[in-house]
Length: 247
Figure (cartoon, rainbow, N blue to C red):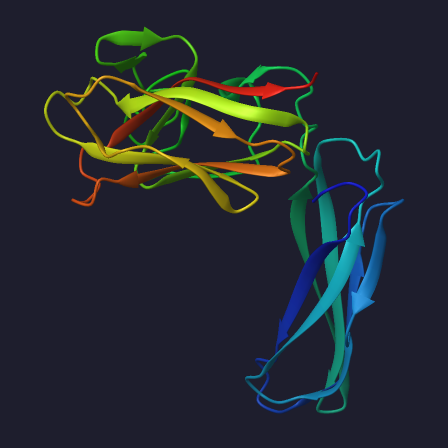
């Protein structure tokens, strides 16, 4: 969730009773100092057996909310067969990390979300097996990179930049752990708009120098697709991946 900004939070209630639930009321509890404003209905006269309703809120953390994990709670009260019942559920949310204000290595920043075709995205290592930290040094065409990200197609790493950065640069390609197989294509999206796309790069290729204009973007995604032939052997390195930020 972005501090100082209204974020949509939803709570769903499914009626698993054999008969209709009546006087259904859904509430949301948030940390002290946060605002939760309902959007639409949060009370329902009746919910049929097997049916589901969803309540929505705009939740605003304080602009100075500390970067950490917080707990949100949903509470539901309803009546069935003349008996009053209540349910509760908890979930965890995290505020966004502070945006970088100076030039920063991508591997030194916390991302807001990631997906990867094989195991986790690695920091300053190539993609290994399915565990974390089990990769080898990032190496493309015989050049070793001390900093960067190791991924495997299809992959997506999302960063919050808060409009503080102007460009992103990296040396990209298939990691040398793949000697002859593997083909990948890299791209960068800024607030959903594709800014740059590499050619399809194969295991024998040297690194491709990637530069993306991300001026003013709040969110930037680093994306890897397979080369059109499936994602086998598609260990994809972002060598020297760096955001250029600040004045």
